[in-house]
Amino acid sequence: MLMLTNFSLRRPQYELGQEQALRWLVELHCMAEGSLQGLTEAEQSVFAARYAKLVERCACGPDRISKRGHVTADLGSIDQLGLYDAQRFPHGQGSAARSRVFAQVVNAYFEREYATETQAPSELIHVTCTGYISPSGAQRLVAAKGWGAVTHVTHAYHMGCYAALPAILLAAGQLSAPAALRPANRDRRVDIVHTELCTLHLDPGDHSPEQCVVQSLFADGFVRYSLHEASAGDTGRGLELLAVSERILPDSADSMAWWVGDFGMHMTLSRDVPERIASALRPFVTELFAKGGYNVAEGLRQAAVAIHPGGPKIIDRVCEVLELAPEQVQASRDVLFEYGNMSSATLPHVWQRLLEDDGVKPGTLVLSLAFGPGLTVCGGLFRKR
Image (cartoon, rainbow, N blue to C red; front, side, top):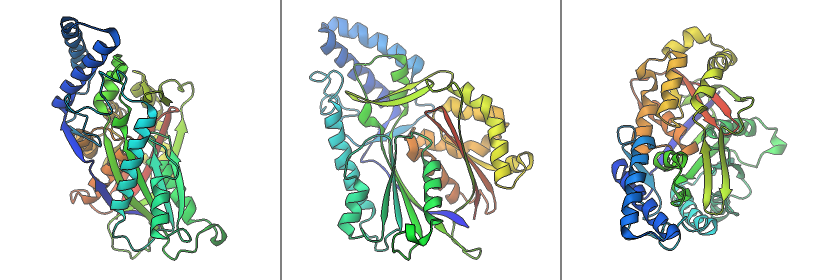
């Protein structure tokens, strides 16, 4: 029996209410356009009014997201800008500066997260799509702790929002590997750690509606959890892994993309993503339940459903297609509302919430769904213990 346990959530240093964040975006874009075009004060006012209307029309509003976490002091303040000093850097500082911030924050996170840890995991999987530095924070941790002989490090990078489920597949494969392929570690535990710093990738000089959506939706998040082998008599709280599936949809490669640019990373998100996912969802979920040994018609009615909340429309469309009751997806809506979209770190936040919810009884099936570039549909079936 493979179990997900030991969830540990850490919030970013700063948080900003969504209403204030949207006002800040308008001011920042106005400053950037003024620098790019040499606008007068009056012309900047005209631009600000026009961009504010775009935000009102396209952005994810405070009724859907209450607040978002971030790792830089820039967000919310026009007077204390560093990375996003749009007067000097209309597109924000370049990828090198953003990478330095990523390295500092992630290295410090690993150090704090494992500060009191005395038992080394046999495997450590670092998941992110928002920054790359070598050696990684995971490698620096293992070196600092002296765990190099007993802990393997694997990097699961650039998969995007659905990466938690492939990371679990990696962890399951490592737990089942022959002894000759494993480190000399008695603790058969794989730690999975997500560090997503989405707010390092704003471009104040890109005023497109698509980027307005992205910049109003994504947030920073950190989470750590473990996959380990448990016996039938194990009384600890966790999610038993039953099945995982993944499918790349045909003719969908341009629907969602995430690539490294000169000024951070850039994401594209087509309007047809919810419909493309919806068209493939029911047969995908039926197959996933069958892999786990369940009939979808019976199992789905009683299941808790952990959807990666890529946005409110994704949750709405999944509910329509699978005919879910509102309470089945409430945890996903709550995480989106309280934290925003934290890329791959989001779904583990939903899992942790379901584990801590006494209203979700032991034995309840948990259907988990996430989506990302490819266009990839990924799903997992769990049972709460």
